[in-house]
Every structure is written in C-alpha cells, then in structure tokens.
Image (cartoon, rainbow, N blue to C red):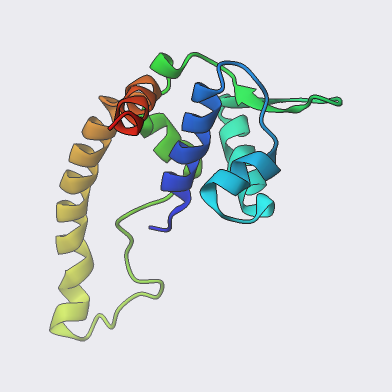
Length: 139
C-alpha cells in the first residue's frame, strides 16, 4: 500500500477543520508537503465517490461534500482503491510445491485480515480524526 490513503485522510481532515471554507490543491499540498498534482489525483478519486466537491471561481477550491461524522475511513479507503494484500503480479509456477499452493492459502488469510481491517476503518469517522487532531494540537 502506498501513502495515498494517509494523504487522503490528511486532505479530508484539513477540509473538515476548514469548516466549509474552500482549500486549493496548492494549499492542501503545502500541508502534506507534496506536489499539488498528487493532491489533485487523490481529490479526483474522492470527488468520484461524493466525499468532496469543488467550487469554481475566484474563491474556488475543494470542500467536503458531506458532514465529517458521515465519512468513515472505510469509505475513504475504498475511494482510494488501495489494496493492502495483493497476490503475485504473474502466476507462480504451478509445478512448484509452493507456487501451486501459496495463492489459495494466502487468499484465506488475506480475506480474514481484510475483513478485520474494514471493520475497524468503518468504525472510525473523519469527525473523530479531526477532534483528535485538535486535541493533539493542544498538547
């Protein structure tokens, strides 16, 4: 898994803390310390899922499309479409004892782990993350 999921949560947290004020990809990129192009690619994925929307014009930028309490981390994870567990890019050698068995065996393990991950992500929403950020900032 790349850092896109973490960057997406970072972006959405900033938008949540902005309380409806638009943020440009440049402003978001400054906080994440990355290129605005990276931010725009992630924002496009989030927009396609209805998590953010963009406003055109002189004060344009991005805002959350819905309340932070209704956006859970599982929804963000699915929007970014990153998979933690992936099989080989090419099929292993089926004539090898390991190559023949490894994918079916790992598939069972990965499915269980994916389910636990998604349950945890589904129980954490963006509002909780932003409240924790505010609390952390006061320390």
